Image (cartoon, rainbow, N blue to C red):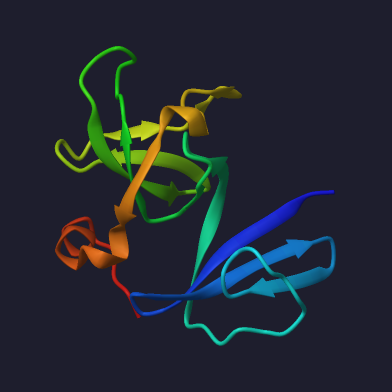
Length: 133
């Protein structure tokens, strides 16, 4: 059965998480204990379906460390959902690297290391044309 996950926020504050399994929604304030009690939120960030090399769930807007070219220098990038496809957008070069292409995974969770959140970096988000409500 497919599972959807979301990180729930009020502005820059993470207030909980949502898991949808089939027709049932589960909420958690810590991503550990889950129940059916709703959490008040204004924004939800989609889960990429991946965990990083430290087993941390990765969501839209997470800033990660990655290698644009395997074996080359490490870069920082933000995970973004662009037109239904996940990309890692380099913070230093603005190049978008697709996570999947032609049915193949170009990056897996073990290739990434979570660093921070894009929503804590409003200048970067604004320069890329992303606006928070």
